[in-house]
Length: 111
Length: 223
Image (cartoon, rainbow over all chains, first blue to last red; front, side, top):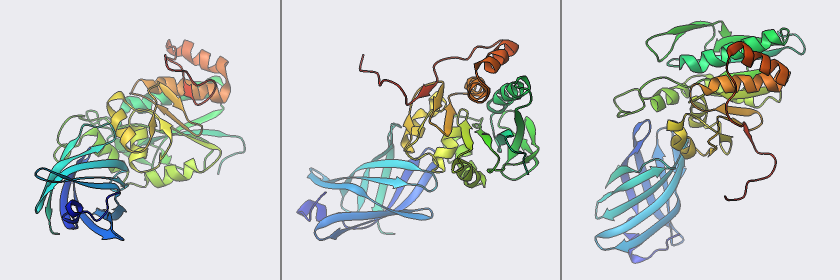
């Protein structure tokens, strides 16, 4: 779990993401923030909001590497893990559902 | 509604089902029921009630004679879907898309009720386990599906075991398409014993393949 270190601070806010699943692309709104200095977050997709777990933010050349997990049940039950690089107002990386091949994730700041 | 002691095998049809996933266990269970002296009432059902249901293969249709009744003792058999495996799921109705669509019907609710009943065993063929897993019904369970769907099944929180038939108590899953024969024979053996199952094998000129996996006995040490 990341604390309120300088690189992590830059990722807080609202993000609009598109993630690929075996049944199609899914628009997701990500909200990241700090509670008692700890980075927390939630993802809102179709019909549900789920907490993010195992969130980590690490400074890297070119941005902040952000990783997390989320468990969704809508539109289908899926364990997802994310690994993205945040640079300024954009993030790019991939998500992986279990043993499935990873798929591209892109996100921008804002609703 | 049903007489005491009567066993039912309700095989579920849904739009885009795979015909062999349905017909293989249907024939085996029908033969097992007959050879047991009428111990099994085998029927095709749908979540919506009696209707003509179109499969995913060249429009072949089968007739559901009744609605799925989750209170009937015995077996509820859920088949997989037939369709393209590859393709952009936003454009093509791939098998995962067809299976996820099952989640929008009344079927998961009915199967969930069936799973909660001690006298009902839910059995799946091919992508049937995946359809239930996508609907969130197989959390933490052990199951198998078609070899091409194992990774998706794993991503839904199911412990995957690659066996022809996996017995997880009140959930029995079978692998790809033809494993519906093995599932049917295993259910016949569970209900009526090896002599009836063997008699069905002789009638069908088919011998069950592979060991049915169960969480029993000695855990194998790494080879």
